[in-house]
Image 1 (cartoon, one colour):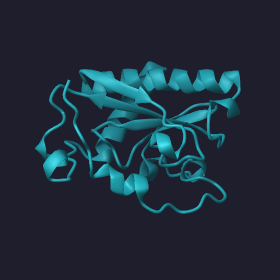
Image 2: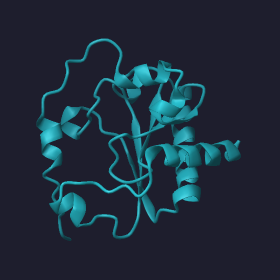
Image 3: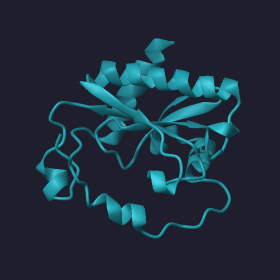
Image 4: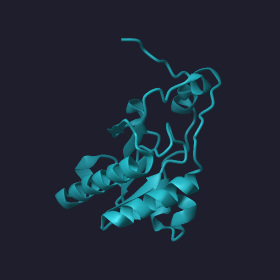
Length: 164
């Protein structure tokens, strides 16, 4: 197996971060009424889904509980179930809209695990395609997204609405 190194990510990982104080960016997004500007694609009872504005690939989204907790221990069983159910709906919508070959789905708990926003649990759903890593991010330190976030958000909202 070959390893692919992504050295451009280390600047973000090791770079200075604002101290945690008050509400997280995810809490502020959840409390906003402008879902389109924030790329929120679905709201459920205890969690919501939003496109990542710094995506690894097109369609990279996150499912986030409204409650600001740093790990799964802060959620009730019902909140955990809601988180996973919305994650499944989002995966199905991404399959319908973007037709990926697979997915990376995961959670980074703690800064050392790669969490950029450690104070607010969030689950990443990253669609993947065969050959989706190319020279642009590796050599050019530039990600190429084939579709604008607003357009992806609109298509995913439609696909999610069709599931209910």
